[in-house]
Length: 288
Image (cartoon, rainbow, N blue to C red):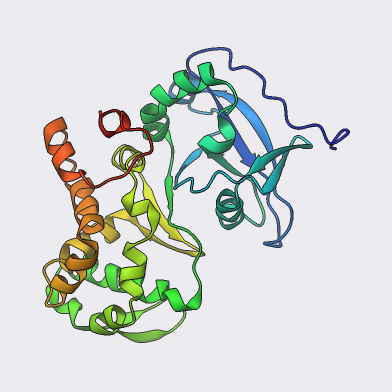
């Protein structure tokens, strides 16, 4: 229960291997208030103890504007969050059981510069150790055609042939439909998808490369990262590829480079020259 409207007070982490994890409470209704417990866990014990009680998933997303208009209740005390984080957590929240997450906006004490310096240096290990990494691309409405776009990527990845580029009879989730590549481009649905901010950012790169099980989420729809990457590879080999590359070549090349997983720093600097970051020093540090 919240006491006098006081904000949540972060308890210091007691070792270098310690992290906070967010145990997000379940809710039947999407609009129910966000509630969670913020727990301390030890990454080394997670690795060594077979029956460690809390395993976590990690989230890869773009912060966006730092406008903290929403809140989540942790042990009864509020933590201010952005609208983007609020929407993401509502989509990740389960109906019947808790979901355990590591998300930097909440699991790091954002007012503690010393703690952030230590924890940010460990983020590679945090993402590598996560059970699943959820790539959050943002919310989705009907005009975004996300089921059709994901169905197209899935067909191209699974069939391994470029004929899926033209027309494929696919299961878009709820019904069989004809997905036409040219139609998706004409309606700007694919361009709009590839223009989402996540594809432009630099820090998210390591989060995908180091993740062992990566899922891409857009609204209530999801697809394995491997299908998105392999579908993108087919995308650039198809008859309509020039139009897509002209508009969003950087986003496509980022996906392909992540899938190839080249690890020489000079290769990375070339592959991701267009990936954005707010601090110029991160052009190197985010890739290192």
